[in-house]
Image 1 (cartoon, rainbow, N blue to C red):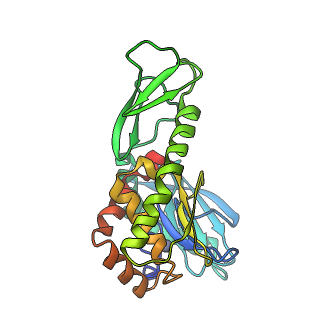
Image 2: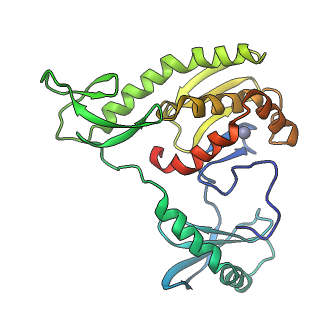
Length: 271
Ligand SMILES: [Zn+2]
């Protein structure tokens, strides 16, 4: 929630996922959420409906306007721009109580990723909620995730490290040829591709034509993963989020808005 018109350069800003250009590296990044920054001006309490919630007022020297967010821990945060005041920040939050209440309802409806992966835990694989099951032949320490057979160090431990390593390797084999195929189909130059374990990005594109993709794309429906690849490929033509950039995206991925909606609904399952 902001007191200015939404930034047309990035349709994902302020959502679970956002896409920003790094001032430091010049890369355009497809990220889970903005990196928090700034210094705390005050910590207060705000009533929202029947709740009393913590309200953090954070000064940010580069902010140009007041911005209100509901954080995953249930507290609210107002960014104070240069020249702004804690008093006005509080008034800004008070004026948008109804918006905060709507965000509480949305937050409650967002599915959460399980923190520990055990036998029976359901995780996303190629867009489908898939249960982790022991292999039926009784071979010790192997599990199945859909069609994948994965060695683990034992069922009593968190299975996530073993499964993540397996999925990362699988993504490293599958994504580079998929990128080359999509690049060829839409007349993009063939980029260099790296599959990484980014904590805050789905993908990025450098000015030198190097695409980095998050292995977690393999957990998404293939059409959503393709959208992220195509989004990054379009940055080879437009290194920004201008109207021209979104025109390129629409041309190569006409149903990209469906993919964005999926990301907004399901990002929390993949973080
Ligand atoms: Zn982008």
